[in-house]
Image 1 (spheres, rainbow, N blue to C red):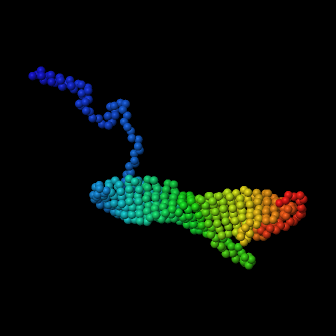
Image 2: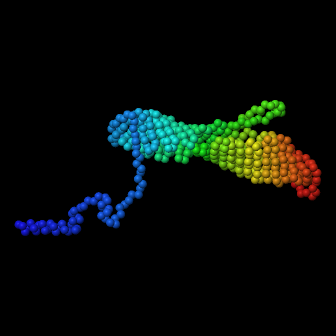
Image 3: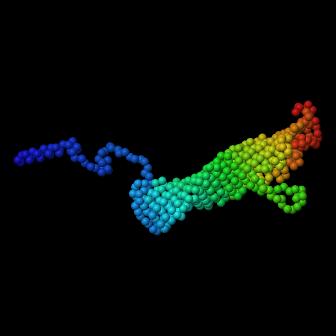
Length: 454
């Protein structure tokens, strides 16, 4: 019997000693770290996807009611906060008269009554009577005529609309419905808008327009940069402006000391795209592409027109054309600069003047030169360099000329010469009346023999 027991024990020990059997029949469990250490050379798969930041949510109020509620088929804890109720999303605080919180982590918060969202980092405060906070999407949606106020960099902007969706992490706000943006200088109106606070930019769509004290702007889309007070208007941009100018005295009023009455003028400024930078007296308005400025007394066209200091300084570039309907002339060239305070204009790059009929603005003559200057207070134009004057029946040349607008009198000097009726003459001065096609010669008239025919 003892021999049999010893034999059985040896048999069992033999089986246990077999390496293969021991691994198959005796499983060993390892923790995750021990398992990887026990298998040298084995490289586990590593998940390189960035972990989504967990947002700690704080919430509270002066009163609390807790209950179980079925939400989307799931039984969840619901908390109703009252009296100073709030939800703290990082540095952003959401407050309301009553807040209904779904889930202990505040996955959803229904804000009711006197809703206020404060984002002090971006100087933004939003107001509404109703809102919904969504933690997973990082948004708060506001309804029932909400509005927001931003106070930043000494600028204050207020926006009203039908509904607001605020992306808390991105500092971005989508505004829907009729949108009204109010600043200290003007009001903007549009259908929809996006406010990017980090870029200090408001984008408006749906044929937005702008009102200021004396201006009305409209286009297909508008960008407003709050900090710089810059406006960019794209797509059929138009400006309508009202101004008041001092009228001209009549002969009877000239003997009186009274100031002439101011005349109300309406201007229309259009083009492909417009930008406006307002910095007090240094405001700059630029119209780029097919720029056109219309007034009752004049028309102004160019590829690009830039207005500085509230129309005190104007620069026009490319295919410049200016028609004065009071003095009955037209100017063309490549570059024009106008200083309103000095009442001075400078036109270059193949400049040309067309003398127009008072009745139908038809062309009666023209003048070309290297440079044209206009002195508005004297109603005079001075032309310099290779001056050529053409009327219906004559052609004259000289080095410089002065045109007196009120008298329709042009004085050509600098070795001037004239070709008329197949005869060429020279004189010290040639006086022309372009609109009447008249010529006066003075200071040493001389006929040039064998002159080429006109």
